[in-house]
Image (cartoon, rainbow, N blue to C red):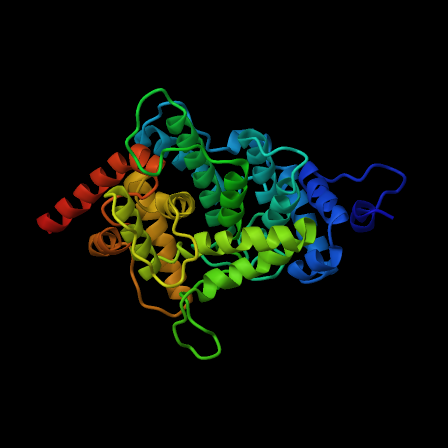
Length: 382
């Protein structure tokens, strides 16, 4: 009996499951089921997760209507308006599953059908539909789901990553000369797959708090980031083998680690500034790859993670700040991210003077700089 029939039954008829579920099960059938099942916490959790994905996709409509695609020559302001309109529907629970979005983007970005990427990316996307390691029933937020670091946030970051990939390719392949260190070569299929995997996995099982070791209560650098990456490693290895896992995991881990908004983001800014000023990049002690191309990949994910908080104007900032404030309260912290002073602290100490990727700078810096000016004027007038 095949996995589809085992999960959904046949009754002598074709099971009513979405194409996304078929993609996931096809990848599992060709890989190490034991490893994949372990990543999902067992057969029962996998079954519930696939049923939830099937339910989400049965009511989502056309997946392509939900893609935040790059329009040629588009300004950041126009892109932000489109993204916020779509995001309002996602927040209301009208969205395709993460595997469905992933499948559509693999098609659009040219991930070939016969590659291993087509097998492990849907698996990671399916795992990202779980909340803190448990199956979530449908699209609605669970009682335990963090207000900010939720499945919707993962959807935002994946969409932003793919938008920036398209913008990067468009700019690099244009006829005009672009004098930017990080816009000198197009992204390869492997680069694109790595970025999609990083976007999907960067906050898997996020506990809704900072990098605090639950056993000691002490801060531990990369506690959340490394835990998320560890979840997806067996999924990649299950279909790609140890050789692919050994090749891909170090750059995936480094890319995800740079989404830590504290010192790692500051370190990434310093490396990027050094490259753009034709200087030797500083070493931070925890990164393995300092070449321009690896850093370029890290900048795209880091920008995508922070895009809604700066590159989408005041509406995006307010929505994210409200979610972060709610999440902090859920964690027992008395923190308010909604004030103009908090916004300015975020701009000065986390996001910095600019987005870091070549595409992020060219497309979304004007929106970000205007927003910074607005917040500073508001503080001066207070």
